[in-house]
Amino acid sequence: MKITVVGGGSTYTPELVDGLARLRDTLPVAELVLVDPAAERLELVGGLARRIFAKQGHGGRIVTTADLDAGIDGADAVLLQLRVGGQAARQRDETWPLECGCVGQETTGAGGLAKALRTVPVVLDIAERVRRRNPRAWIIDFTNPVGIVTRALLHAGHRAVGLCNVAIGLQRKFAAHLGVTPADVHLAHVGLNHLTWETAVRLGGPEGEDVLPALLAGHGDAIAGDLRLPRALLDRLGVVPSYYLRYYYAHDEVVRELRTKPSRAEEVARMERELLAMYGDPALDEKPALLAGRGGAFYSEAAVDLAAALLGNESGGPAGPSVGGGGGRRAGGSPYQVVNTLNGGTLPFLPDDAVIEVQAAVGPTGPVPLPVPKLDPLYAGLIANVTAYEELALEAALRGGRDRVFRALLAHPLIGQYDAAEALTDSLVAHNREHLAWA
Image 1 (cartoon, one colour):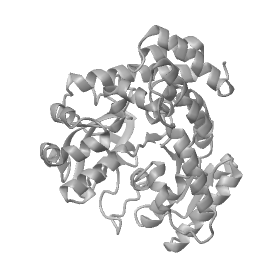
Image 2 (image 1 turned 180 degrees about the horizontal axis):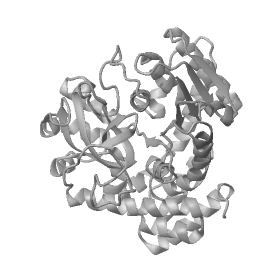
Image 3 (image 1 turned 30 degrees about the horizontal axis):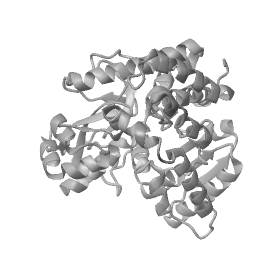
Image 4 (image 1 turned 60 degrees about the vertical axis):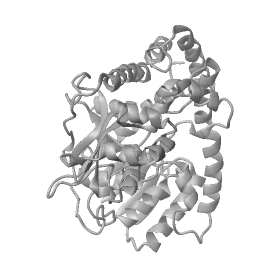
């Protein structure tokens, strides 16, 4: 089996490589290709990747290349983890929206739109090249904003699934609180990428006992602390929102915080310099502890489980059941995993071609979302609003134009005022002109 990682020079990559080495019975990879135009980074990451494979006794071959076409040729699955414009673009995304009193964040609000505009054309070009060489290959998108990028891929007819690590992270934390294994925890996870709620936490599978009330009663303070939201809010909601909901539920508080501390991009850039220096040490043969602070925790487990299910290669071997994103495993069937995929009537208040993030049964024909009970209007209304924004954002990314950018910004619930949308449109175009063919 050949797996290709586009953006393989990312400092994330050793997390993925570690998972591939540990879970080789779940996903037996004969060849792992890391594709990246940044030759120096790629050499450092590739060297560590080979040492990780060697230490863990993985017999697979690791190839590094800047040649995208060679890298994707013959691949069974292509993982996308790229950042168009690098950390410098992220730094801008996180700062200029603050000038208008709006959240500066790379996946939502004005900064998220900027990233989508830079990213969607590049990803679609990569996907088209994949389709020309091996049309049966699956594309697994970890590139943010995952919902918009996955929607672009699916609307263009590609075999694609979006992946995020929020669900698997919550699954692991809940399992620790409950004193059970992650495989025992099935999340009723619903919403859009970076706009989700856990409406139930079931033991053993989708029909198991809902222990969310007991979880909140016994561990609500710890959960609220992780989310940086008041415990009283969780008690009133009776659900666990994604930590990204803090941008909505505490917008003004977040803006005040962001104006008084270094941006996340600055922190990550510093961390990446340290990580790359570590990766260059020929004695290092495991992922360093510092990588946990980089983000993407448990990405490897989620990615391995998803790729194994899509490629029809589950073994149920030493990796054990359900190493993926917040699911469980049906005896003799596909694992349940949290993915980004087409709505297809799952949430009846959304268009069928919207992309949602929910539990799905995943197999070689792709994800099939599990049924979702009727949602409280408190959540359904926000989901519908952000879905409308994502539709307009994709239109702006595909067709360009200042007016389309303005319409998307005006539709976003974190903006929604014409004067702010006008000013943000000017700033977005000014800071991203080199990446916008139409600007």
